[in-house]
Image 1 (cartoon, rainbow, N blue to C red):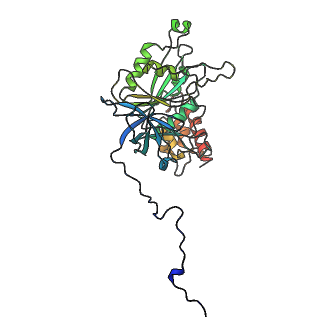
Image 2 (image 1 turned 135 degrees about the horizontal axis):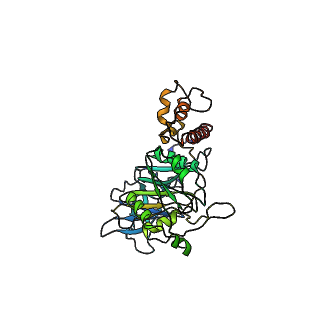
Image 3 (image 1 turned 90 degrees about the horizontal axis):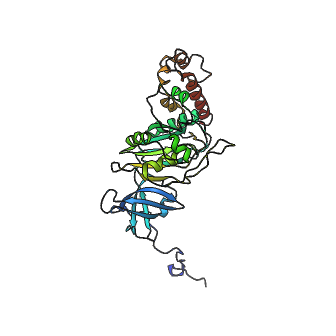
Length: 349
């Protein structure tokens, strides 16, 4: 006689992961402490909390698992929970990245789709080049200007080692721009003694420009970034020279670091970054590049509709604008630089 089946014969295997489904909701951490990231080192994030108060302290945090795909960079404001005492050998948990006001980015080169966030929430980009040893590269300066304007950050050009060589040609190249340019030099006595201290008036001028702002310094190795940072902050960042064979600087800073500007208003920070060899702009829309060439931009008023502003556009208004001297002595070289950048970016976008 065939057996009759009922619900008691059904076997239900227990869930190996538990009977309670895991929720995707995460705590809001509304009571989290907000801190400023001042350095990042191998998965550990150093932050300043309760800044400019009697309770100010430095603590170290690890990133929460849900943020493992979200890069945290120097300058970020983050939410911290757990042990936020700042005592030795304690570790807080970083659970949220606050909305960024500005983001300075670059790519390894123009064809690299991976964006690298350098710093967050900076007000000013100080582009540091040397008048000589190593020789200044206008292509690098132009790329840094494009990145600054694209990020909504005010640029400033600092030319060091002007006692070695007068930067006349470089100054002429950028004379038509509304760009602040500062010069720094070492005195003969300091140079003879091997001291890297900068002449005081250059430090004072730059100090006035940085006071009350968060400023990030970028430049090739060997141009004197760390030397200037030491003079402005009283820190002891390692400094290096230039390879006499290659003409390139030796890397001395291995990671970005935010340091307080001495004798300045609260919130005055300098972010020193490692020396970089290239400044890729893969993340920048080709149509926005011209905004960084304010000496050329008015020239497109006479361009025909749909003009691409490159060498293949014979009726481009930029050629007549530069030929007529409207862009100053550096106009021809600036136009070449703009079109070179435009070509490189369009080739990969």
